[in-house]
Image (cartoon, rainbow, N blue to C red; front, side, top):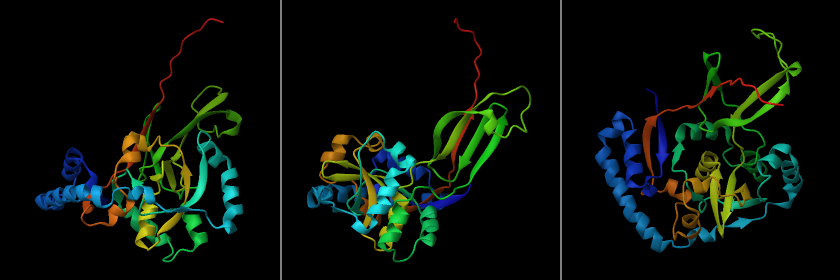
Length: 293
């Protein structure tokens, strides 16, 4: 089994979630399970104290306009079909947002990806470079492999946990390579589009607060380089966050988990867990029947 380092925001994990994560750690980490558990217990105490000492801090997040010199570029981004289609059901704005006070509902940072991103990131990114890093239209290519289980079942996998089915479309077969078809005279092709989610740093507003939906690893790298504010898409869509935390908690908790907590040794711990790949199994189940005209 291959293991890789992760940073866990264990101070905000419930006891069952923490214990599950601990059981998944490497044998070396399991040898220090008592030490990690004691740290988690202290983190619970600190979490309670933060509810008093930092009550309302999430409401104080700094949000400002992006410099007008980038207006043309941002207008171009918002006019692209991929952007319009992604956000067709919600409002969007481009803003400069403070990293530290973003609400974090994902409690794990995979440090292997952080290291890969850090190698590509300039040590002191300019405003223009921050836009390229935080607001790209296309995701960097990540290898996707295919395994044929049988002619009607296929398994696709990737190191990226963001691998997903984007859409299913129908196209005329004349647009496709038919050199390997087994038999028959095909007229239509049903195509499953696999890929990755929207690559921009994405936040969702709830009252005065902002929840970080996408971009955890990039912001971890940038914050570790001393960057305090980044360009991001701000929407009013909480559909991702509310799957993990109740909207009432996101909006009203005196001190929810914040991105800066990943950098607090009292609230976060580095452990080694099995390196995972995201897999998608696609099965074709044809059903033939007749219908009345």
